[in-house]
Amino acid sequence: MAESTTATSYRRDLSQQDNGVENENLAINANSNKRNMIKKIAIAVVLIGFIVYVIIDSLTTQNVKKGIDIFFTWIEINPAAGLFAFMGVYFVATVLFIPGSILTLGGGFVFSNAFGLGLGVLMATVAVFVGASLGATAAFLLGRYLLRDWVQKLTTKYPVFEAIDSALQEKGFRIMALIRLSPLIPFNALNYITGV
Image (cartoon, rainbow, N blue to C red; front, side):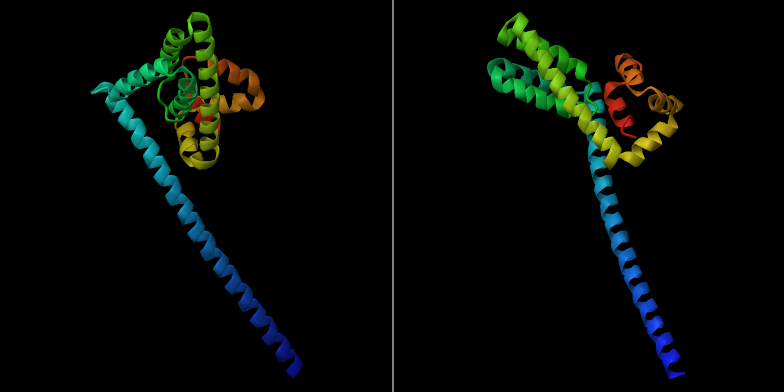
């Protein structure tokens, strides 16, 4: 009888220890999830704040446009360093939803002035391609891992994105190539949406 009481007591102690470990793990996971959520919210607020600033600025004082003009002048003076700086700026513009058409046209014009027409257009094409590709990759990864919940809400809000998602599952490369050529869906938004 004493042995069964000891065995029962031992099992109870083990069960209580297991419950204590599980409670500790739950508390650690809750704190980790809370910290991750705070990080995600902070980054989303910064990104959304910047996007709102760019939109409001483009309608009012146009400080962003003036900054781009100053940047293009600097590239004409420093063409070698300007090539890499232009790639970096195009990368950031792609991630932050800044329209790339102004940068693309400006890059062609500025690099043509700096290097001559043929070489300048080639250098601008390479810089735009590299900057846009790296920016698209970063936006895709942000949409896939950091801003996934926000992007999923965006895709469910608009039925077009759900249709694109199902089409991508069936014929991914063909649909992606056609969508990239279509002016109906912005290049910058598509980078995030395909991350889901």
